[in-house]
Image (cartoon, rainbow, N blue to C red):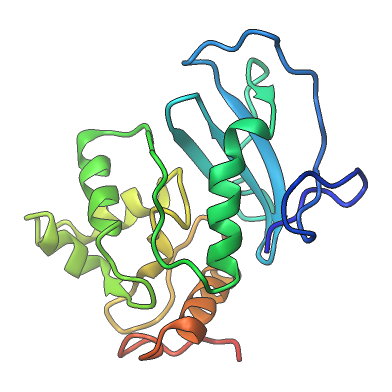
Length: 203
């Protein structure tokens, strides 16, 4: 389950969710204005950012590549109640797909890779080469790996479900320990267990 920082009061969410930090919010927010909040989860602090239309970032703030919020972004939890609820359901094993509007920014190639990632079923894994074939560029496994590492909306765009051709965990922006934790979590709630070739490092 997700938590806001425990140093401040809880919001009207499950008892395990507590605020991270409240910063002043503007009274009139444009639809393209970016808001963000930070929640604590079973895999560390998560930053959520986006505008009134869609989520643009889901970043592991305790991972290898945390997102530094732009000074023009406004801290507010209000726009993220739906993502937080669905992430809570995901971490409790009740949700296997997400119904959240996304607007990740990237090149056309990156967008194709990210779209392909969203077709990987919960609890299953594919290799970088398999993703390359899926987007019609079978020799682009290395480029797929690079695009995978640039995915700005982790978990919902499940880049953690992409593994090496030998079944090993390789390359993850949040760090291999988080990647492993997410795969272990999904294998726990998937009726068939982890995909062939992947053996979670944790129990």
